[in-house]
Figure 1 (cartoon, rainbow, N blue to C red):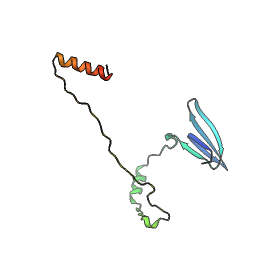
Figure 2: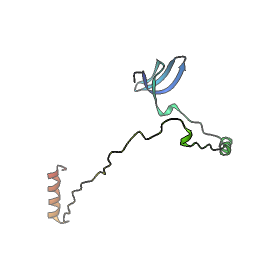
Figure 3: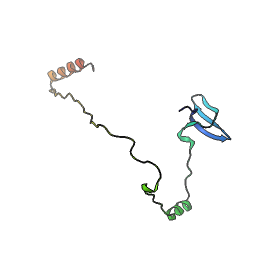
Figure 4: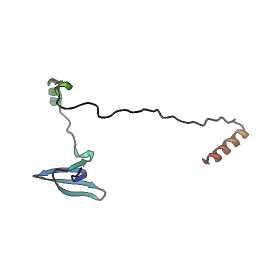
Length: 118
């Protein structure tokens, strides 16, 4: 893409036209600064969501739900992917029954040795 990239960011701060990020590494943490624009990938613990209280939950239930139709949006939202072919996988099983007597057990062991399992 031709822009800088910072990966495994656990803390990020924007200072003017520069981003200062704290990266998680095997040795610990590393502080990196980079000019904008840039690509940033973050670790899951960058966002610790707050748990809403009872008042917030009740207030959210009273807020109106806004429905937006696709026709109201600007832009081309036609499918970008096309399925050319779909094929189911098959499982090849080698089923063979052995008798429970001594000769069947010997056959079973010989078959396992032939297949390289034993």
